[in-house]
Image (cartoon, helix red, strand yellow):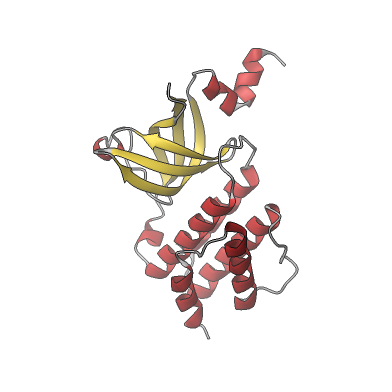
Length: 211
């Protein structure tokens, strides 16, 4: 394979060589850092999950129209700094999931998904994560468009069962969907990560409204 083809087919190698890459991305987590920067974990289909620094993201609406917020889906332009850190130079959102952000149940379930995907998927592996990226993207959109709680929960469960199966944690794909399978899936994720999910109690409350 020629060097040109290698760079074209391997975004991580492109970054290592000091060149920018543009990749689809979903923001799994974001927090303020220093005066105007942001630290974020993003999931991409081509290089997996990576931690990024967004310099002056809280002060640049031109480079970051959405302020690089949780659940944002769009195109991230990445570069590698001399320190070795990956910097996100620009983020162009493709859709904003506005319904999700204004409904507490939708927001809670979407937060659970991002928390689980962030905890389960290893960072900086450079592996192709197209399937996991598509799973999360489809689930977030399904939650955003859902008209009732059952539909939201179904989309959440399908994504989590697929995630745990793909990552070799537990395979519950043959079990009939329901609250028991959701609880078993979340239990397996907590055991795997050796920590409690921050969003779990809120999700349990949503499930309880259907009892």
